[in-house]
Image 1 (tube, rainbow, N blue to C red):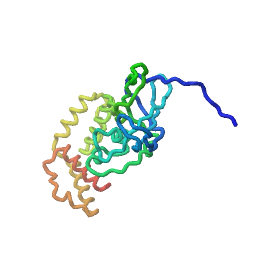
Image 2: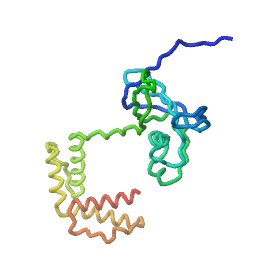
Image 3: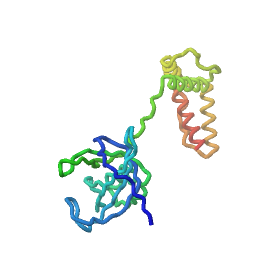
Image 4: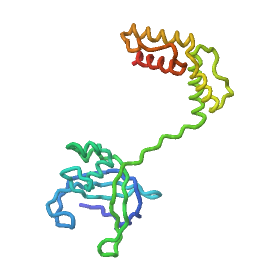
Length: 238
């Protein structure tokens, strides 16, 4: 019978920082001896995480937590299940929650890991101090070009609704397009726009939708008339 035994490994404590961690495994364990924060026989949940180390290899770190009786803000167990997205925090605060830690395997979150000396004051180790969800990616800012395109499309829609047969001039910049939308949108409803709006209300009637029968058309601006027309169209398409 043969056994393969690898070379001796050394423990390198991680520097204090926030790290992305991924749950690798989780299991229920029983404490075999008394310690500062638990007693022999206590049931704990042991979480095994892979820590992503910038410019380095992933390393494994474990932490044991006691499953709490309530959703206490002091419970590390609760911090982990919230960070991994296994529960909705506010719902868990208000209601009884059932959670299966194994559902978190493969999920990631962030953790603050702190490098510190052991009690012997000679040996370095590291420990988890906080768990929190991955940061959400901010939506990319829309470029001025994108906004100008949207303004041009909206202006052309307004012009077509009013009865114009040509689009907005191609040389209008973003500011000019925005000003044109305001100016044209403030004009009184045109005969063509009245026709479009009246036809959409009649079509709604044939579909059994009578919510717009009392809509005042006379006196509307082109902008308000277009918004009402779009509202009716959206209701028909629903």
